[in-house]
Image (tube, rainbow over all chains, first blue to last red; front, side):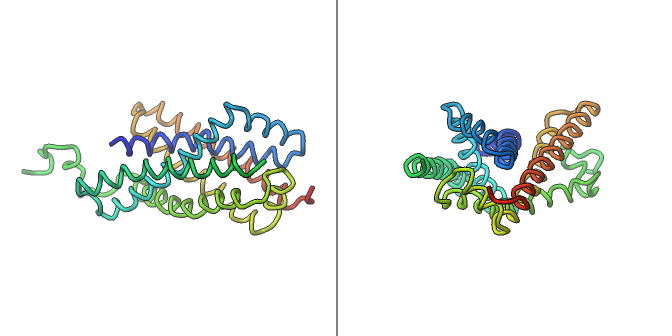
Length: 110
Length: 131
């Protein structure tokens, strides 16, 4: 239940914030150094980082719960125990993967 | 018990077939989701594997066909999948016909505009000179 709601919420977040930022990022990238500097300044501000980390988590959560829904579309994994374990794994997985990505990014780049 | 007396709404509509384009929409949403599984993973892995995330490195990456083509696919399929997904949410929560149509049309225009802007920017990078 919770994971199903998260799938929707993260899907909406990715649709608006995710694709919005992707589009801004590509446009800034193609518009020259000043436009890109503005993007970088906003993206690397504390609020910008929180949003980017949120989008990364939304991406992983939506991807993992999406795989779960694809499996369930085949009629599998409806048994209570299996279903619940799978749901919990999507949350654990999304948090672990988000942490791994951002420890890597903040540790290595720049 | 005849179909008309069925206890649940689901029971009444089962067996009647699709009312509109639900089947096609349902399948498209899933096909695009599998495509995005690969393209999304590609995008994230590519960004993480780039030596630096400065403008020059990113433009070189998207200037090459190996970067530009998957990114174009990601933009097109990503906006399509978002449009299909948001429509499910709108249809679930906004039942009044006029508002439902208005919201779905607004999001259709937003997806087309966003996709066009992103593809234009990508084309400018892919076909432009490397800075």
